[in-house]
Length: 120
Image (cartoon, rainbow, N blue to C red; front, side, top):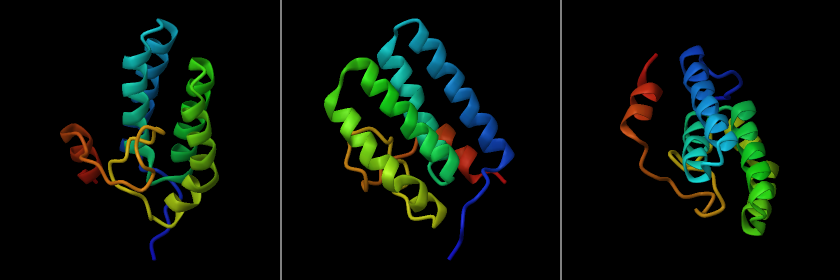
């Protein structure tokens, strides 16, 4: 069994860039675009407990901001189990992390993120 503890530097940089874009669009009240970048950060960081959990934390805060009850409850559940699933490398690849998709569904990964994940 492989344990994921620390995100590789190149993924951390990409993850951080997605969060910068998320915050920019959130501040400008471009919520759909902001959510898009938050989903991308989730895909990049989902194999690493800290980043995975932080993406879900931001999704919870987003749900609270939007007063989206389904998102809030969905994120609370994901916060309870997501981090340890990352630690043991048992995650649904490509899942965007929102309550609008089943938490265990694998999803297609955008090409640019696939290239990042395959880079060493």
